[in-house]
Length: 116
Image (cartoon, rainbow, N blue to C red; front, side, top):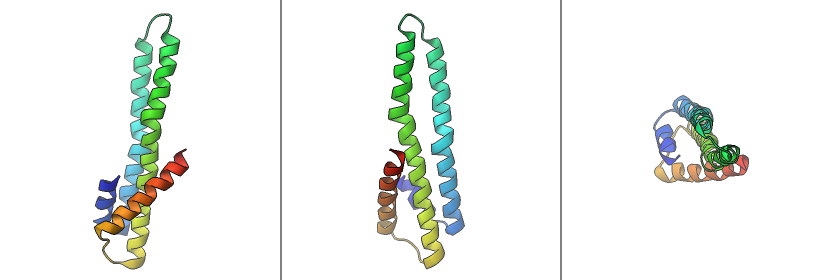
């Protein structure tokens, strides 16, 4: 998340917005789809009387531990890169590391509020 903010800060406003859009697409959509496909393969290979219980457990673990945090990270990346793009568009000044870290911290908090 912080690395993406620093990368976005090195571009202009349009580059920062594209960085956020690509990061959002990867973390909010692509990675969760890959994880769900992997989970579906694993659930198909579970056999036995407790297969339904294990499949449900696997779904819950994947959702709560991997997919949901990944989507929150995608939202945070989009927020921080959008904020950097707006900042650069309005101010035209280079952002220092403290400003980028502050924007990153704020976007993480907002994404956790949105995601939960």
